[in-house]
Amino acid sequence: MFQPLAGVRVIDLTQVLAGPYAAYQLGLMGAEVLKIEAPGVGDWSRDKGLLPELNARAMGLAYLTQNANKKSVALNLKSSEGVEILKRLIADADVFIENFRPGTIDRLGLSFDVVRVINPRIVYCSISAFGQDGEMSRRPAYDHVVQGMSGIMKTTGTVETGPQKVGAPYVDYATGLNAAFAIVSALHETKRTGEAVYLDVAMLDTSMLLMASLVTSHLTGGWMPKPSGNEAWSQSPSSGAFETEDGLLMVAANNDKQFRALCAGLGRRDLLDDDRFSSPDARQANAAELRAELVRIFRAGRALDWEKALDAAGVPAAKVRSLDEMLAESHAQTREFVRAMPWDGVPREVHLPTLGFKVNREVIAATVAPPELGGDTHAVLRDLGYSEADLRRLAAEAVI
Image 1 (cartoon, helix red, strand yellow):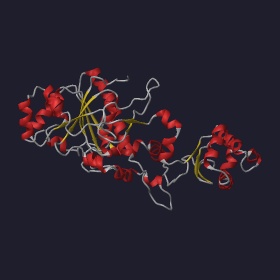
Image 2 (image 1 turned 90 degrees about the horizontal axis):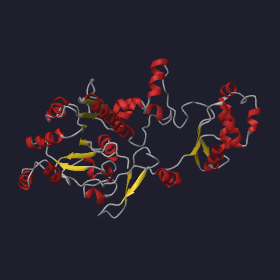
Image 3 (image 1 turned 180 degrees about the vertical axis):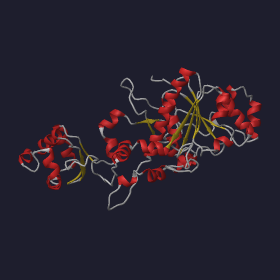
Image 4 (image 1 turned 90 degrees about the vertical axis):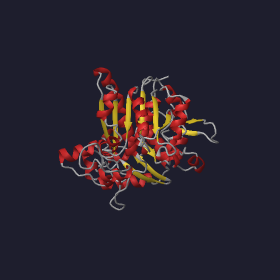
């Protein structure tokens, strides 16, 4: 089994989405992830989700999605002894991840400067909305706030609708992937140098990287992006969204070769004999007329039929699907974006995301169900040398 991070211990102080998703990636790759949570409270997402019976168990779907392959250790970090226990865990760890608002971790006495004294080879990753420096650094934010700030919403909507955000929390998930990439890279650096590494991962930074081509075009060429709605970024008249008899079809025919294939797939090779459409320059000069002609053609057929015909001709095209339609495709089942995990005590399968790439043609999926709040506290503390009497005392004092 693919376990490149076997033997790596991760201290995960993160909550909600971006941070837990980063730690989840490390867990999928074999790391031992200790999720540190407040006793009796836990991750904020534990009671969030569509299924009340899971929320009541503090195992809501919002929590389950990115917390498998972890252990849960309940520690009260508002107590000095809780912080001292955490420092003992850090001493034997390889990675430390936190996503508090900048400044909070310092007040807990767990800043990078403190932690690297405890563990000189630690990879310390701070995840925040706006980064650890700059005038916005202390401000809180969530995915949709960052989407609004970054500029992406003003390209996603249309002139008629105004700005619109992406439906999924894509900045959160992309930030989690960005952080996981940074952490794996830093682990190699600490191995090379023997020195601690500090990583500063920000949601706003990540959102700007997701728009890299737009940023480069704006700063280098003075171009200002406009609302593009469902249209292709290429602005080609033979690309973008087209209405069909039963829904939208997305088509990409950007260059001359693709346009010729498009004509073949549509059964309309005669379009190439029309002087208005016979060359790339002519098509650009007569973009409105070409677009109108393609609109008429596509409206006369069904989206999936057009998809199959254009695919056979070598033209990228896809019917716009709902989530359930995509997951029902045999391709989705082959690729296994998610895998069901049987879970004792839950009267349904829990479907959890797999690693975002296959390894040696195999899917890498979670093997250990998301932990109950504090479910591993006693075992982890016993490994540190705490006795049963110690554990009873810590519980009585609300340290664990």
